[in-house]
Length: 294
Ligand code: KPL
Image 1 (cartoon, rainbow, N blue to C red):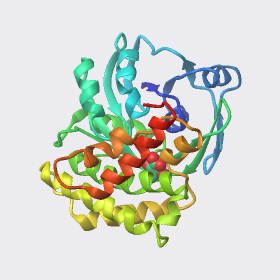
Image 2: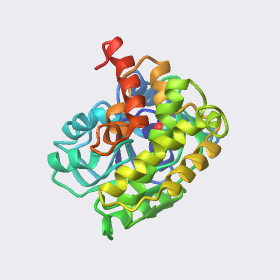
Image 3: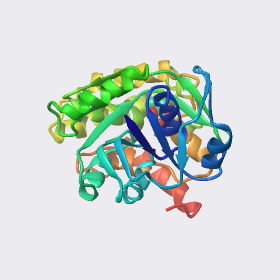
């Protein structure tokens, strides 16, 4: 299978490197990362160790069987533009936040799937990505229900030794992941702590309250996410990734724009009262505004 990965940041580079063990992979990203991969290959360090040579380019290939979108949520329209001239069999969003599949579907003429991924990744130098934790990939129709493409994509991941499943319950899984990201990313970004600090530290009640608000909003949107399922998921992920700096904290550390609008926005800006999420979003947006990032 030919897989194009649009957004060769940390997660995209890691998944592309792992998939290249079995498939032809084109990593679509920016220099100097792309040039480094062309010259020396991609080095994966940490939990998985390998050096591999996927294709790397700043533009998408003319054809591919599968395109994975791993850009930041605010770059989704840009990812769709990158893929506009690509004849792709199927596109899978493996991004944070809500609404990415709608943006892709509105702009692309092929099946679009939703996906979640629990691998941890961090990019250090050009051409290098660290795997900070092995995880699983789940793909499926964003509206729920069976999908032949989801089965095919899960099989392609599995063939490359990546634990993957196709699910017909993506709306629930996407909202559950959102609860984890609202609870963990926003809180750790503002408190400047590693994920493990949410297990029993002073910010743990903030993360749990934000997860409960996410579950309330999910239910009001017709997705049956229980409060306890959301708070349990936050606790489980904080435990499994206790040494990680969340992607939002990494953005704050690097003084980059965060994914606050796609992650916290759907909860903070909802008609349901969500005071904790609204406070988290307000503080993160103020941080961005102060630095001219929004
Ligand atoms: O997805 C993540 C992120 O950092 O974006 C979690 C699961 C919170 C791991 O850090």
